[in-house]
Image (cartoon, rainbow, N blue to C red):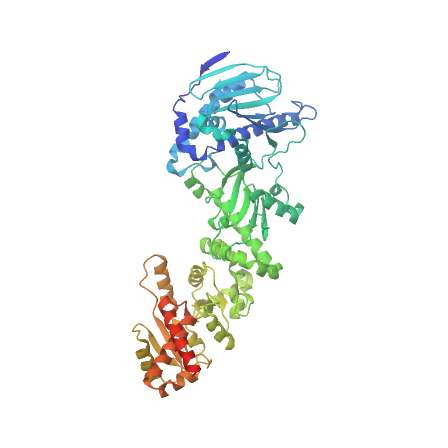
Amino acid sequence: MKEGNIKISSENMMPIIKKWLYSDKDIFLREIVANGVDAITKFKKLVSMGAATQNEGEEYCVKISVDKDAGTLSVEDNGIGMTADEVEKYITQIAFSGASDFLAKYEKAGGDGIIGHFGLGFYSAYMVSEYVEIFTKSYDGSAAVRWQSDGNKKYSMEECDRAERGTKIVMHILGEEKEFLEESKIRELVRKYCSFMPYNIYVGYKGDGKDKPLNTTTPLYLKPAKDCTEEEYREFYTDTFMDFNPPIFWVHLDMDYPFKLKGILYFPKVKNKLELERGKVKLYCNQVFIADNIKEVIPEFLMLLNGVIDCPDIPLNVSRSFLQNDRQVQRITKYITRKVADKLVSLFKTDRKKYEECWSDLANFVKFGCIKDEDFYQRVKDIIIYKDINGEYKNINEFLGLPAEAEENGEAGSESKKDDAADEKKEPATVYYVSDEQQQARYVKMFADAGLNAVLCDNFIDPHFISYLEYKEPSKLKFMRIDADIAGALKGDEGAEDSVLIDIFKNAIGDEKLTIKTQALKNTAVPAIINVDEYMRRYSEMGAFYGMSEGEAAKTMVLNTSNPVIASIKELDDEKQKFVAGYVYSLALLSFKKLTPDEFEKFMNESEKLLAEYVK
């Protein structure tokens, strides 16, 4: 037996490991299994070169086993194996030195963290182990070796009777880490970290021919898109994300130059249009799982999707701030964004019907992406569609009756620039919108009856998106909610303001903050409507959102002088004038917003009084 000292000061490394990586200690299994996979790959290379021979009928694989009685977790491969000299070099020296270098990087990164914690390697076993044994036999026929250490200065090494080529790592699990002696926990970690590794991985291998590997060695994203079927895409989605609602469509990523990247991004069905549902984009490096939703690589808005991205060219042993400023990573991010945008544009142009059917699932994603990413906005701005009050989908140009945007090249580009210059001299077109179809039903009906149109903007992101579009296209359009200036949209013949009518309503309502105007409207059935200035309302809502609201924006009630009730109210006695004016105001409020308890009680009392008068 050989005994010796590890040639670096490692007695303090365990506390540092625990401090920095405790929350991610699960990754030890990925590191140990990945080492086994690398050993198999090296042996296969030797076989392909004629420098080694594979055993007849041998399956390249990694076997994981748990022995609760012994308190051990073992990971075994049938790869290249190691000689005694190689164990001394790669384990006693390089593994521990590598761990030391890794921790130096980690500490240098401060709180920024190292992406994926990749590179911890063999030493990661000590995150959960009291001591570790290695049993290994090299492909070259050298004597098998047993190595043991508790991770501190001392280690021992001796020959052993292992007969098979390859390496077995036996981890003697710490008392406080007993969860790693549960086979169900190990299976969970294999599925998370090793689900696409290139050789079969077995847990609890029995060798009876009935064992099933836990991983998929050839994930769908490695196949060319032209060779993948719809059924395969859907099955891969269900298996990977355990989501049994089929995705609406997907984007297959495949780039070899100037960087390598493969993957599939799925657009999931949206469960609730009133919120942004975070998806899960899994990042892999050569089929080894790194992490979910790394925002330095994957644009924030794309994290609303589900997907798998495998990119060997992303540097992993670096800080997040380094990734943010790395030019290669920026190119990767732009490529992913462009491919997603191109898929949406293609669907819009080639299958408009399907695109419209999918829009309720896509709307929040596309709008959020536009707000967050200028390049994405420029690519998709003309395929953002809105449902109008007639149930038809239109983009802004179609809604306003404008020609489609010209291509920004050649003569078409010149014409486009001329049009842009002309637009700067025009007033922006007004796009009326509906934020709540049910609450604003009266306004919608008045618009429809007058032959006017409005778009539906009822997602929670729409107030932000509307402001964003106005900022991007200030000379082209402005948005106005349907209850902001319906009197202006539906006004009839001009007439002088009726101060007598205004006084009757002011006295009856008694609200000094309420502005009252008179105007003839095209719709004679409606006695009065309430308007609120668009931008004052937005300001008020923004204040409420940030907890700085001073109350509702000031309202204006427009009395419709074309309405028979309004036209005849002057002929009533004072008591009836007050009652009718109050009831007209309640009706106008009811069409405008959800009534407060006091307002609703008042409206009910007035309605009951009307019924009593009607049956006399």
